[in-house]
Length: 233
Image (cartoon, rainbow, N blue to C red; front, top):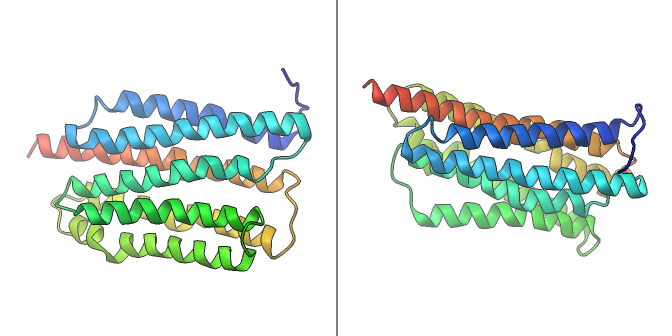
């Protein structure tokens, strides 16, 4: 087993992310018994996203221990699974309040996968970095457009009760602000010539507190509050 130095902030951030994501996943799986049946799927999807983050953090920490660096692929293999899972969780969360078509579901899944994959192609030098960055940015903006101006927003606005609308507001804010770290990191490495000496990895691991942990807990909290609200109606 690798022994990290006390001053190794990158290794410490990986360990914090790993333990935090594991605790979040356990909490979310336990929380499926606290919500109505229609809310179990969004909560489980967030638990799966957290578990994927656990695996990605474990592999990344092992790579850091061996070579003192983290190849970009270690970040993207986690994102390309967890981010679509979170988008799916938002879709099924909105679906608890009204009818949404299957077409919207598949568009969101495909776009969220391509959003990550295209950025990886740019950082992996399989595609021109500028083109990959711009295409990935367009896909992210499409997801935001659906969240702010699409059918999901319409369904949430028409829902009764304040808990669902308030939860959707905060989750949408996480996708807007928290997920901005990923195209920003892509921009710094592709255009500013930044080499990841561990500092960018620390930023990504800290961002997991918001983007994976807080996101899942917010879904669970909203589900619990809405379930209680409807049981007392």
